[in-house]
Length: 363
Ligand SMILES: [Fe+2]
Ligand SMILES: [Fe+2]
Image (tube, rainbow, N blue to C red; front, side, top):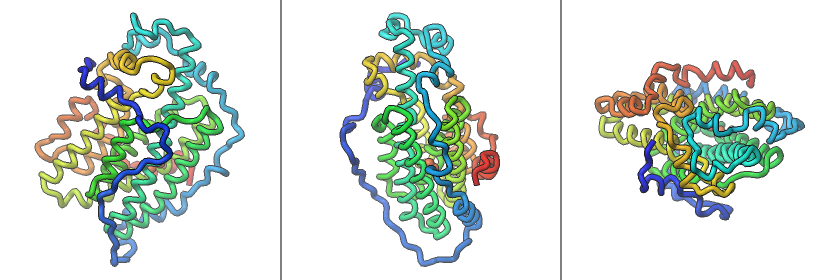
């Protein structure tokens, strides 16, 4: 990918309030009370709620925290990057600062990368905690308020277990990535209640479900595997909640209203795929962020199988919501350009979540 100077400038931005302990974001949505208490008026949501009540695991008791984690050994088991393995991925380090790196530096950057990724998972989980609390306030349906309340509890557990894992098994955590924070800010800012669902449940959680699954398959750490399995059994339900809720609403929207949702979904997709890079890792290991991004962005993201895989849950869910084909297939064309349209016929998460629950054995 050839990156323009302006785009590189944007990509190289890193967190400017990394030392702050809190961040304040304005929420422009109205808080809605409903006086219609008829439970089960929306049977799909009611079923999810009943299921969620019985699926509350406990990170303190259900995960085996006695497992020791040796970060260096984990990198060795996964394979230490070198010039040849990077070249296979289309990354050429000739003439860059990376050329001077030996095994020690690569091991360190891999350890930092893992910590960075897990830190962003943790921050994303807090984003989900906050967004779902926002849904409790803003959604007008009682069945959705009930279900969202269970998700608030799920997300609290997710933040808790990632934080404990980083704190006790890794060397602390990284601040939130600027581009992830910007996306979360936009979701919180928005006054339309469905945008919280679309941004969080469908886009961010859809991508997280694919990313967690990938990490769960690849990691050699049994504790992290277990942790991700538990988290994923909840995440599938969360994405299903988004799809079920929005399906009803989006059937009633005009093409113009749907277009706003299509643009929002596409914008979130591009931000998550292209801007979410390990900028803070390069800062920490002393490599110029612009140089690192340029070096590692030499491939075409549209051709990268890992980048494509991240959309394996998002695309079928957008299809189910009618977002692909509205406005003459506006979003379909964009997903075609991104080479992710092939996931269209994969099972959507509403159809799949029970399967995920059953295969993880966490109930
Ligand atoms: Fe979560
Ligand atoms: Fe979630």
